[in-house]
Image 1 (tube, helix red, strand yellow):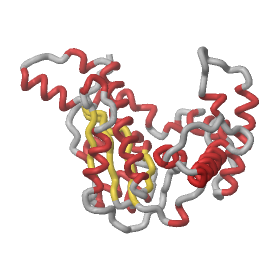
Image 2 (cartoon, one colour; image 1 turned 180 degrees about the horizontal axis):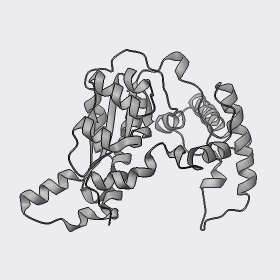
Image 3 (cartoon, rainbow, N blue to C red; image 1 turned 135 degrees about the horizontal axis):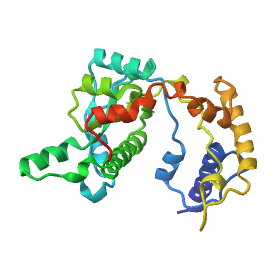
Length: 281
């Protein structure tokens, strides 16, 4: 790498770290390449142009997803591409009327899917006793999350924008009926994919300082309150610039999980999962 390229890379690294952490809490500079640059530039996008994604994009994203790690190669996830406008409207309503669920060119619902393993056991005439246990359900949720994140990284490397829709969990039974899911299949979240509207791209959202999430040798809480206060100021300023409610991280946490109504129906998730075929022993 020549000196000019090295200086450009260093400038890009410093700019990306400042965007993610702020100028006063930069982590040490480390290795840098286009993949890391793309990861640090991630932002959730909720406004999409009507431009369709290129032919074959869905299959490319699924190939990337299937290249993610999967516990014991069980491959306990599936994905449903939803294009029917009526189904999109209903999913948007479940998700609190998030309009981008309807308007994004590509909408995917990622499933923790143990139904495929159950069918395998039935066809093999073998009881898969482990399917009823929380461990195997956890494997399926983790598998789905890792697969989806691989797809997100692939999409963003292709110039596409994304946003996860966790609010599908507001009513997982309704989602299951809408998508005709078999027992032991659960919609973990949705994912919007498409080309961002210029006004929707926004800034990179600041994250907690690494001092709050990176622990060396043991878990530590020394200095956490001070670091959180500094992060609250940074996030509040970000919110003001984005013309969002002028809140901070502490306020968001309290608003999001401080009351049962704030869970928006997800307080019933355990019972809903049982109804969908997950006894979670």
